[in-house]
Length: 225
Image (cartoon, rainbow, N blue to C red; front, side, top):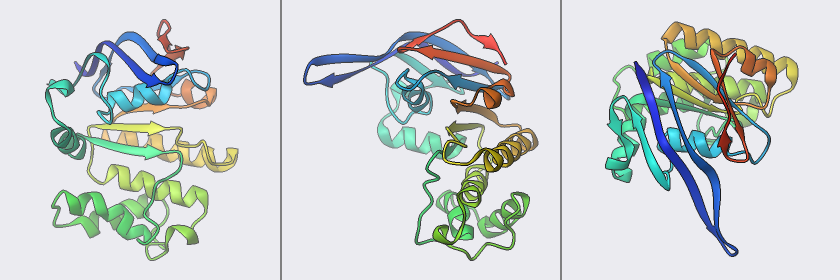
């Protein structure tokens, strides 16, 4: 059963030289529980596609449906509510709030969702990512790998149906990146999340169930991971 469907989706942006097509019309579907990598060279449209699938941006043409809800039918506030209920994010640059501790960063999405046991959940997740002893540390007191582990814990606290990851190991050295990858896949299996990941790392992509390849804004024939 498809959890995410894109039908004839394209994305154009206005430039001083006229309209530029970033994504040519493409269609795809991603099943619940599937782990999918989106790969391609720089500028191929990977992050644009991820942003559209996550409802962070709307396509110029076509429709995107998440869990039987058509994103085009929602206004910006309704799309934000849908993301809060169903979606988690992990970014290359971590995007932690510098004035909050590791524990507070992880708690934040649960608190915003009105969870009464946000702190308990956050502490459990920080233990799972190996940072149970760093709860009171601020982002600038943590290494890059530790910050990304905090970001992973934050992404999973709402037990999202879908997790979107944009170059989750892109800012990490290979050894740290490998540890973060292992953790991401481990938590993903535990929570049964649908994972959609943009990556330039062929080895990371090969660990996924399926690989979607973009080239100059066009979706090439899908292949197995």
